[in-house]
Length: 158
Image 1 (tube, rainbow, N blue to C red):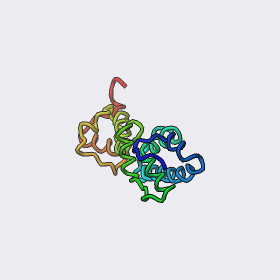
Image 2 (image 1 turned 30 degrees about the vertical axis):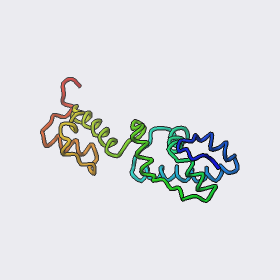
Image 3 (image 1 turned 135 degrees about the vertical axis):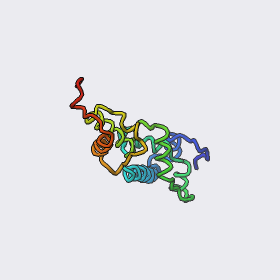
Image 4 (image 1 turned 45 degrees about the vertical axis):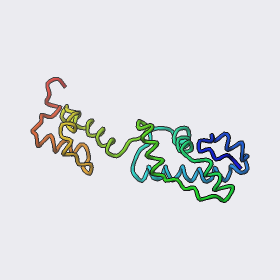
C-alpha cells in the first residue's frame, strides 16, 4: 500500500501501484477532469489554454492521489472531489487562462464603444448601468444616445 502523504507525486503513485492498477485510477481521474471541464462550460467560462497540455495537468495536479488510489485499489472511502472547488482554485491560480461571460461582455463593449463613439471607456464611466443581458453594441448605442455622444464617424480626427 502507498504512503499516506497527501503530497505524494504522481510518479511515485505510479511506481507504487504499477501500470495495471493505475488504469483504474486513470479512469476515475479522467472522469474528474471531465466533470471540471463540464462545470466550466456550464458556467460559460472560456479556457484560453490547451486542453491536453494545460487543463488536464492542472486538474490532475489538484487531485488527492493517495485518496484516489485508496478508493480505487483498496476499497477506501469514495473519493469525489468538488469540481467547483477545483475550477475555482485553477481560476485563482491562472486567471489569465479563463474568461468569464462578464469579462467577455466587457471586452466586446469596450470594442463596440470605441467603434461607435470613439470612447472605449464608456463602460467604465457608466459601470453602474451594465446590463449583461443586452448585447454590448446595443448597450453602447443606448447609453451613448442617452448622453448625446458624438458618433465616431463625425470626429474630425478619424
